[in-house]
Image (cartoon, rainbow, N blue to C red; front, top):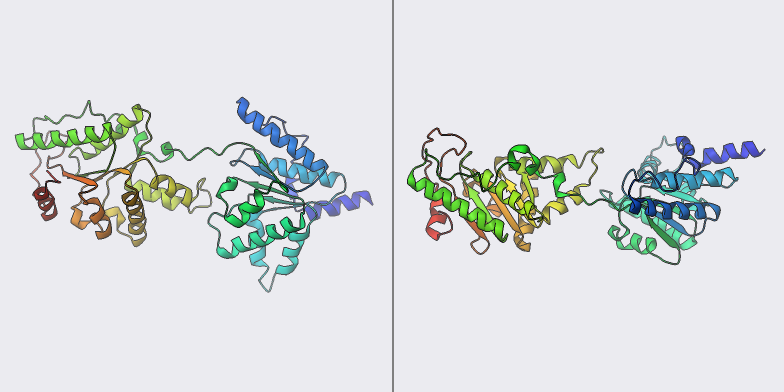
Amino acid sequence: MKKEKLTQLQHYSNLGALSRLTFDNLLPTGRYDDTESQQYFTQAYEAARAFANKPNGWLILVGPTGCGKTHLACAIANYRLSIGQPAFYIGTADLLDHLRSAFSPSSEIAHDELFERVKDTPLLVLDDLTTTATTPWAKGKLEQLLGYRFNAHLPTVITTDMPVEEFDDSLRGHLNDPGLCRICVIRRKTPLGLDYLGGIELEALREKTFNNFNYKLSNLSSEERVNLEQAYRNAVNFAKCPGGWLIFVGVNGCGKTHLAAAIANHLRQEGKSVLFIVVPDLLDHLRSTFSPESRVSYDELFEKIKRAPVLILDDFGEQAATPWAQEKLYQLINYRYNARLATVVTTCLDLDDIERRIGSRMVDPSLSLVFNINAPDYRGDIKSPRVRETKSQQRYSRRGRLS
């Protein structure tokens, strides 16, 4: 009878293959080499063992993917099963999928029946709780579930890779309640570094500095040398004291990317935070966040880019042809324009050809220095034909904003 009861409990638990995750095969210090991470994990391990012996209130395990929080949560559930007590495990995404499918006429279980089972289970292990990219319906279901268990003081284990502070007010209020909840941070989530995005990591760009920028090339006329030297001075001044916007306009190969990369390399050498990214790559990164395999959410990535202390956008141009791309770039430019964040933009387009909402912010003389580099291809000694100034360039030149 005891064996049959255990079998029934294991079937009820929904653990399946996760029944292998126990305290017996878990190191109390985790699999970390650094002392700080070991201390964090040990505290969470001891809290999990205490909760498994006497489930009371809520235990919330916070940490990035792979830190061991799911193992700890499942170890609690498996221990309860081993002593003949029920526990129910489910991942947040799976729970929402099951609830959606329960509306189908072919579903083996009704929506209400499934939801009641999860709500009322004596011990619930809810894995990977998140509200990122969830619909209002999904958020409502999670709030309904956790609100019920909160009011009933039902023992609950929650794992999440989101800091509790980032949840909506209703959920955050439950998770932060000191009378019911204990929060264990297993390992701090490593902030999304600018190196994750920066095109400056490419070898060719790391080598571009102010020292190896030559504005006295033999294939330049005296006027072009003066123009290129002034572009160089503007870049150096920006690197020394980043502020406002610096917009470099010119043909491919005129040196604008070299100067932009030199600004980034100079700031990095001084230990300052800077993000250099080629705009087509930026849009690709944003699109990739919609993939299930993405290790970063769209919101997290876009916020990181928007708020970068110094942002360098290289090759701002025709890649913004789709409405989605135009809207994303407008949101980015508009945020930084309103926040007056230091920004460098390089483009080979006439500014009149850039989407009007974006272009008007780029040429605002109260914020931007727009500089037209009229030199030919900087990467070779082949004399390129002189580029006739466009109407917009002539107009900015008369204003004194464009040389």
